[in-house]
Length: 276
Ligand SMILES: [Zn+2]
Image (cartoon, rainbow, N blue to C red; front, side, top):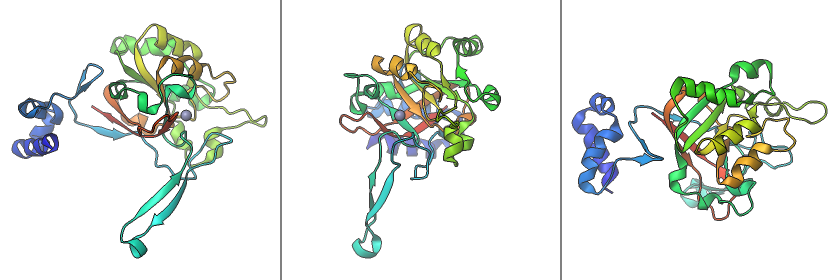
């Protein structure tokens, strides 16, 4: 009750420009302290929100999906004409559209979607660009050197980070064949994280999870799913089919993962936001 009212009140009092200049959340935080609120934070990150960027594709039954899975079916069950209100039911795999792989997806006994702590769903963003290489080599992977190059520019990968790969693959999302990029033998070709990069993030750094703008955390031609098997059993999450990564800064943003809290789920379609 308190927080939204106070945010609106603060915005009104300061005027929009001043409110944004001071950072809405930060400005409100001082006043929130008076009503039992606290400065918004996660993974040790303080928020000063000037920009909100959605990283989520619109999901429909045409969105590219992993081979062998049936896409979402949306069925209308209540209509204004008949019922006075509107509602649908969905039948969908957990792994369709912009979605989260919960640790239990590849880690028996690891966290299901509902067991992931809320704090692990708010993370400082580390954005790794590989789109230059991906243009000429769809099998390109995020390497340890890519991570070290990021650190030389921006400092050590922060604790609780979400390390995201931008390959430019979302430009293909309107065409399932182009997105899967399958060769004549049925092997897909798209970028992903390398096994070594995943190991580095697991052993040398402390992350919450990783994300990609392709169908899989592992590159398309992977046969062993080493990145999935390496990270997820250690209670790290993954996000696949991210959008709009070109619109966020390489460092300094905070990721919010809006993963539905479905009991026992191996993941789920999710609304992902970056703010900075
Ligand atoms: Zn998945």
